[in-house]
Length: 150
Image (cartoon, rainbow, N blue to C red; front, side, top):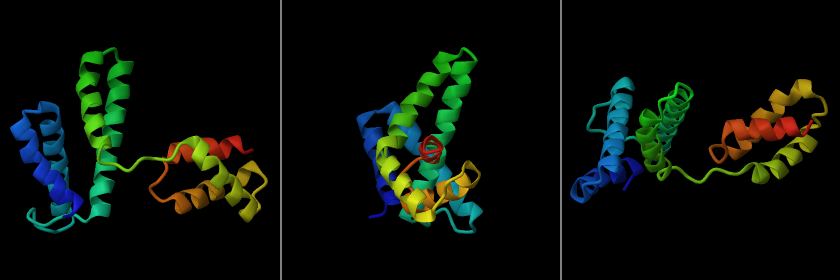
């Protein structure tokens, strides 16, 4: 059973459990999946593969994080709270991301392998590390670690 199918099944579970936060979040995910299917020329009855599903969940998670920042910076914590609750549900579907401490040895090895010595070629190093870690690490964390190497 694909991740998309599992999420659709969890909609029923959330309804039965009367879990409003999970229900709201799962519905928004399924809506985003349907929109993605239609945008790619498929029918809403089709299924996204796991890679596409994870990509959509990451995008939704990023949107929630941005909303939280906007609400909090504008003094609206009551609007940020539901977004935080949804973010917790979304992140439960994502694989665990690597920490900066876990990224550092990989970045140092890539720096030595590529022979990058000056800050001008930092982008090349970030790209190489991101390619190796493909989906296992946040791009912002990789950038911070690579910057700290110079």
